[in-house]
Length: 150
Image 1 (cartoon, rainbow, N blue to C red):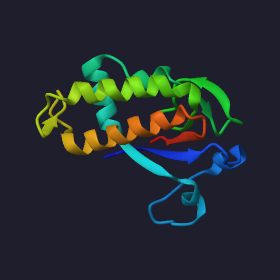
Image 2: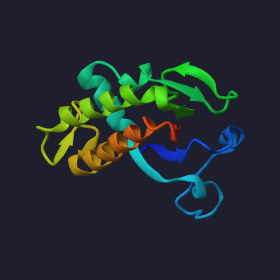
Image 3: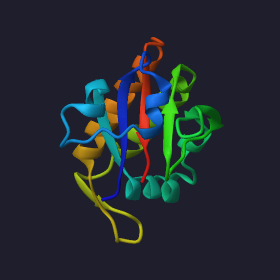
Image 4: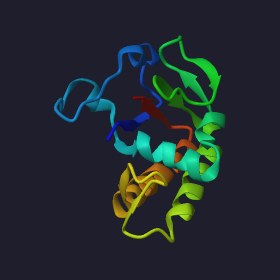
């Protein structure tokens, strides 16, 4: 599993800190002090979505690039970092809900079309629920979602 890590953080954080932002499960101080909630989406699952649905809707979500002085981007950086803002919320919610709906009829364990990747439906659904909840919090304009790419 190659994880895309997403972190709900307060929008009061100094954006200059985000250029080197790296929360870790091992570090309970440091950057973790800003993390309110987190979720993970497997990169192989994103490939599965692209293969099954024909696109990855995250490619159209407006966000900022924290490594480029928070320059605005149309679509997230799959391999880099992205900062989802209030403007991102509606598209994020729609995307994560469509992925959740797509999985509704899948068995508890399922594989990619090529049979190479195995997925646990409950694990993915749990993370998608967190993703939807975090995305809704963006609407309050009090939070960001920081994405750490692969």
